[in-house]
Image: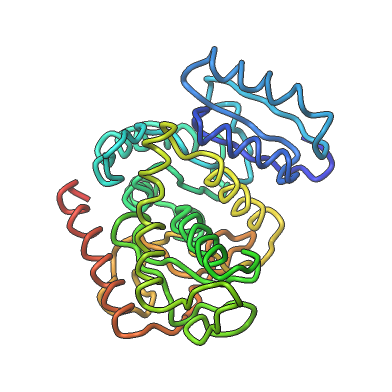
Length: 319
């Protein structure tokens, strides 16, 4: 490792893992990016391909191996290993096999990187995060899921497109499950500082009324299935999102992002003992304090329903 000593390790060199590595190199997230995968030939090829572009990114090293030793002393470890989501398959359908992979691989990584902050990305991310917390014994700040960071970005993009503004001027969160029961928080959403529900449409654009918001919500929830049906996997946006989360940790940014953490003690009645997403402070500790945001009655009920969906699946999986 080099002058800043930061190391990002990524478990799984598939479409998502390599997209995270690629995005992290371009953004200069860490001085060393390590890829670990059971397919030695694949991980070697990915490292070689990434290394050939190092001239064009901030100074970094890329290493990789099928040996967990490559993750030693990592500051952040990202888990992407698991079963691949097939067209028409929900994230919850992936639970059994992906949790088994996580359970089998985590002890070895913990041995070489016990002090790392762990970011779970494998789907269904909320259930995988809950299981990983249970099996690892790590505190909630040290292990969390990527949650609805990507979903919130999808929401902001859709709102920006509909309203004719830059996506950077839209501030809105998706909370709850990273999946079909997720909830957009329209009550607290803003465009350029103006409450979204009071937004006056620009010339040539339609009002952002309840029907439009419902259509946007449907598009956000179904977007992953559309992408998977067309190209087999989602990888670029989750790669960017996860690199941004890791960056917030490594640079101690105190950034608020909707990551998935254990909800016990969160102050929201009805969502205890599940991992789901709510706006959370991210810094060098990992997942910090939950940020309370205003909820309408329907949003609060939707969040409870989302928690119940996850809790029911936990029971079915024996968690």
